[in-house]
Length: 269
Image (cartoon, rainbow, N blue to C red; front, side, top):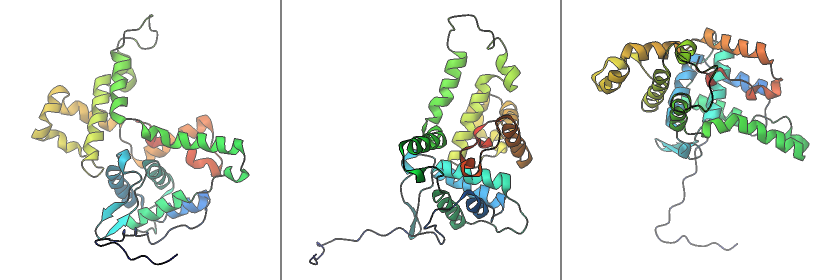
């Protein structure tokens, strides 16, 4: 093809910078797990929280993001959820590195390089199975968070039943959740919005600040603090206990399907 002189004012599009470690091959679940386990859970969770806030909007999931003079890849939330699960369940602080942002990108690259166990067959059942698994992994993140929160109260508190109810009776929410449903949903909304605008973090002491007065007038700070601590937080021991209980109920997936199994981060207690 003959050389063509660039038109006046033309500037070449900058090429995205690549993380220091990318996988140019497929890997198995063991290699992915070992990649994540190189770093202390505390340092990795801080980075995951920040990235989760930064890429929380669907419009950012597949765009390159400007960082200084370079550009780094957007990180999808289902990848962050899986990296977090592996770190919390299998990570250790002993003889591990403190993760930096480029280390999170390495974990993300490893996640994207995971080998699918059935696509190699190249037939219709393999593709169907793959799409079902990907849907289970990704579709929940593509729902509207605010719509889901609103729908919970609308369905369970504001819908008039056509027949007598036997389970959702007076006081069912207090018995199940330890609080009123509106308090439970309100705490979720507050956590979601607060973490989104604060690099993935939320401090309970913020509830005592004057700017939260409009919220705590409706739901007292003490109630919100109790609901958040009891329903939306857990230490690593509690996280592992939730996972162990789920595996006792439903079994443990084979290693090649482990990433599609239950993630305790998907539950509120």
